[in-house]
Length: 499
Image 1 (cartoon, rainbow, N blue to C red):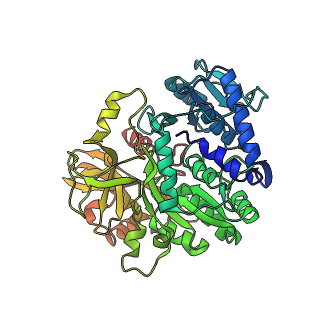
Image 2: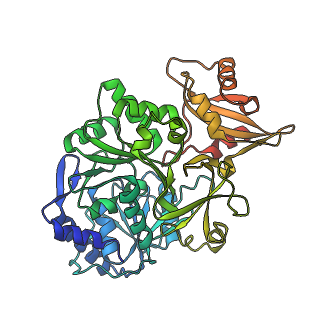
């Protein structure tokens, strides 16, 4: 089934329902959304696009993004969404690797792409993208490519993850089963990049005929988000943990209550306990956590709002520190280095299989073979599952520090340090050491008005974690290096130590 059919059906059910907004202004109802997607599809077909071809989308968040997605799907093409914050040379590499036939751009993003082999259509410059409307949605099989997602590339060149129509359907239905309800009265707010998690949640909101709100800024601005939530009401939003922290800090400083925010689904990096506790204390029962990765988008585990907000369960802190339990469309296990399941409570690699899991990487059979063991996707994440099925992430397997033969998971050190009021951000890595193999180094961002006091931080750690886990070195930075999805670039931090 072509995932684009959901828009066709939503338009048939409620043609006059409001569909897409730019800020506070309505841009399209569902009839207009559907009709314009058909015209975009017609324009792509006129340019030679055939079912199975790739159409790259290199745009900031905007109504045009949704039209590009559904226009490409109506034409039977697969989309290649590219984060608008990437350098043009990085985007050009993705376009070439994807063998895209066409790239849709806005905001002068075409500058610097170079020779990609793709025809460039600059919508903002008035390049024609629409043609004679297609009469129907192109037929696609469940295992046909729908979305070619390029990983964030923190350890080298990104890999193209093949996301099929079946995967998008499974992910969307799991949202309704395990994450949150959606009704036509709800609105999804695109504050995070639509090339990533925020855009992946477009489909379930189209399925339900909900509203789609694109901020005028094209991204995340705390005051704008709170204003739009208050204006539209019943707002759902996907956010990285750093966005939740910034939104909470802004709301506390300005006295904003978060009126109109119904659900904030967070994922994409470690959410530290102190940050989510503060967010719930201020905004209330609106937060839901999910865990996924490009290879199983948004659909590995979920921690519902009842668990995020609960303070009565005897193990509420442990549950809040987890990423929840397996979503309905996958099986999940914790495995050893050979892919065999380990006992509950024992650390190992998180493994997953099901309809939301990729069939493999784009034109990369070697990486595809390494990603699976016995049919299970090896996530590369280290975790522990308790007797109730809650999974707690410890770290990426490559980030684990082995010091004196003992395993140290950076996240537990970061969690301990972040409870100290002098620290705003922390990232922990290992540094090679001739005696211990590796020692712990903490890169820290000092909170406004505070100073780095190594003795105080040492004492703070010793009161919370084993002595061998405490940092042997603290490095003060003004900001932690992050990629365009807000993930800390530990490779860059290690390079600073090597330099």
